[in-house]
Length: 67
Image 1 (cartoon, rainbow, N blue to C red):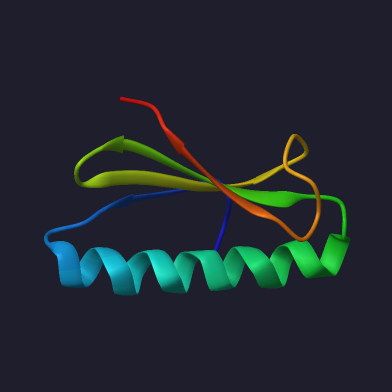
Image 2: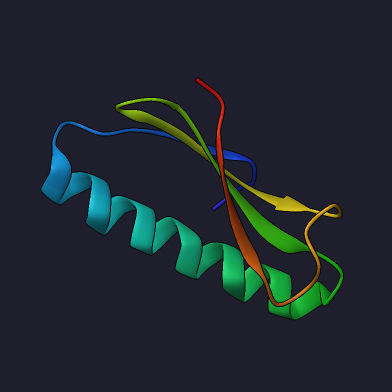
């Protein structure tokens, strides 16, 4: 997966599974470089961006509401 990754989900069940998969992939990438944390931004009820962020300390995942 390439980051940042934008997800648009259809329902709650797919939201949980797609976000879990994307965050797991981001964690693997973050572990490889050991410089970034993970930022999950919610843009709307069904739209999210998962990114590696220098503003989030390595080893942490933060959530942000952009709406």
